[in-house]
Length: 157
Image (tube, rainbow, N blue to C red; front, top):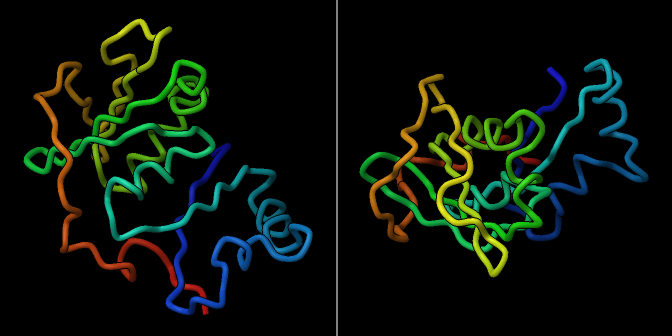
C-alpha cells in the first residue's frame, strides 16, 4: 500500500508512545518506512474512548466532534470545510484506514459557515461493505468496553 496507520499506547506515563516509535530525529520511523518501500506511516495515539480514538485516527485532519451510534457501530465525524479533504484523504484512503483501524463505520460531515451541509463522504465498512449514505440520528455514547488496549494496539514499554 501507500499508507498505513498504527495505533500505539503505553501504561508508563513517563513514555511518549508516539515519540518512542518515531525515535530521535525520526530514525526509527524512517527505518520502518524504508522497509515498507517508502510507504507513509501514520502513528496515532490509541484511546479507550471510541470518539477520541476515531478523532485521532483521522489525523492529520482536525475533528470538531464525533457522534457515535452504538447500535450499528457507526460514527458521524464533523469537520470544518478546510479539514474535509484531509479527513477523507486521497481517494478516501484516510477515512478508510481510520475505519479499519478503529473498527467503526465512519462518515464525514462538513460543519461551519461555509459548509454545504449533509454527509459528504461515505466509507466502506471494515468488512468491505458500503456504509449507507443516510445515517440514523446519532448521539454521543460511551466507548465499547469489550475493546482492550492490548487487542487494539501494541503497547510500548
